[in-house]
Image 1 (spheres, one colour):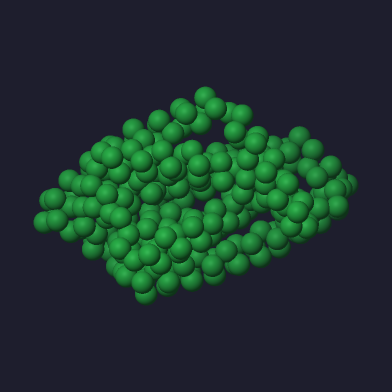
Image 2 (image 1 turned 180 degrees about the vertical axis):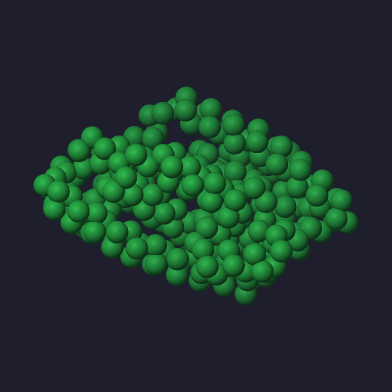
Length: 267
């Protein structure tokens, strides 16, 4: 897929989601309300711990919450079953006949959707959080360069994992069980509910090094609040890039096996 074609598909994805104005407003308002609740809880946790909890100050925890609330819509952690629906109805056969590999088409569309979500579902909750709660503004200018790269990597990792969940439909047809497992794992292990540093150290290390989930929300939020300093930021970004490569290669490989299965069954 050429760069110009990928850009055109991404732009179409942006315009498609820009038409859902009421849904965008409702989702943004919901994210802001739940962000207030989570911010109060984590600020109370920091106060109860003497001002610092898990290595985070109150300002860092508040900002962590609002970055996470914004990322929830940008990475689209839950609720995507476009590919699975097309497999169930058989429409995926027309996708496979096209000259462009479906994974690139879906990825370009998802990048356009993510760009629209960044302009709406991320900017607004961050503005709400910065105006109502203590907010941590990065001290190092490099953070402002690292954060967009980290968010892009988070979108790519999350897309690949959601794509893998949808690819199971080639074998299962009904992916509701796999999708539910994904919701539970991705929410608990990505650092969405609370920073993973709150967990026992061996569990945190296991999630950091053995799973891609922290790359979706924990690492971008840590980079935004400069948790661990510049060396910690670069280490987290390096892990995100590594998981991008691994997850994309895995999605490509599984899609190839799924296609072969469809051909063997006469699809």
